[in-house]
Image 1 (cartoon, rainbow, N blue to C red):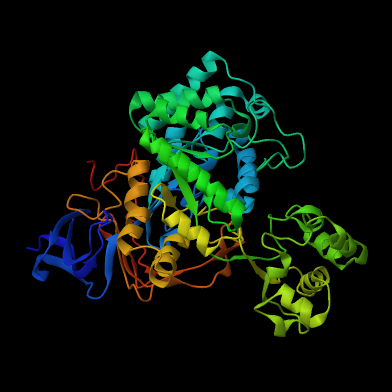
Image 2: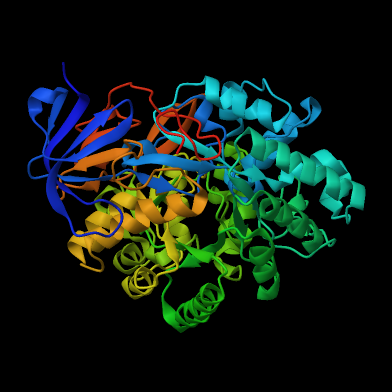
Length: 576
């Protein structure tokens, strides 16, 4: 009788622990790696021929917003198409639990604003069969999953639950009794399986924004998000819970002011902390900022404080149309931002007076990258068809028209469906190299599940290996898999994942190194509520195993739902 359900034969094993690669076999039994070495194929119910292929641990994505998508998409795409076998949800302090019934609509509106998840999609897919955080996890556990899920406790719903909506958004300092209740709720959530807590803290304590933007990443109604105006005392209460439990992980955005507070949180909690975010942007300002951060990270680790940076280094293009684009500046947002009805947008862009406002507005020549560097991907306009795949700046030189007139003519002719491509954060090869060379950077920040109408960041690990390792030779393959799997798994509390060793969960990818890559992003209308999104599929993934079962074969889903809710980092295959 075969000893193993699956044997992966004769692959080049990269174990995730930075050991030198080696050829060998892996035997999988009951969702666990039972043997690594030489295994007779007769001992397997199924043999996977891995000759000429890389065998490595599945990728671990610490920064996603699949809190809604988990209820309608078992593969958590695009991540599940790109070798990601485990994700963390509940990032940035945004989430859906605990949540009183009367605030459900408002919670969805907030998520639409801060993470650009379509409201119609959430209304069509969220079952709302929970109130408390433990009930939320029970609901996630009931749905089919092809990817493992580990949840943070997001701080915003926690603040609202204890303080009430108005007091939380006003940034009122909690009383001792209210702090005690927050600690109780966090303990309850950790008992149920949370991995720690997260918060975006980009404002000032007790000082809500009074402008229409709501601060750096404000709420849908122009008010501040509660975590942006929360007090450092509250963060210390939550950190103390993790310290008392001796477990957990903290994810925070970087706008907290003095670094002494970060260090206090790390010391009190004893937990790894993730600084959001270190961007591989170009220029001396970006370089100086990184150099300063790297020196601080090193100092923290020398003193035993586990503070890491989340590195944004993937260069995936952003595709957008004027139907929806929320990264506008200045007059662009007023005239054609997400809140403007479609017919009004078309009227504004056709109006000569409005075009003149766009030409004259400060910094109006900007989407994310410069408007001159923005690429025309596709149009139905006969006048501009020949300019597809060209930069707006090139079209300006060839036509003599202003960039504003070119964009407006295109969008009006296409009735908002012109597809443009732009860059994010001016990421440069030099900036990427700095992040890769630093031992305290965890790659990622995919934002998977968020900004669905223009972002496909779930393929960051595919790009890391295909571009930064294979093409640019910025890193060894062994180091890449350590950073993409073992390091994030260890920090976030995934038990026995992110590494290939006997006794570890069989979350394994088998891929063709020379063919690894991703498709150019495309629009697809496949979201609940008849909404569209941008997607990019992985290429070269011969097999993906999650908890010992094949979920992807030859870049296609097998409709096998072996993923699990990893309560406390523990899964069905192993509780070690």
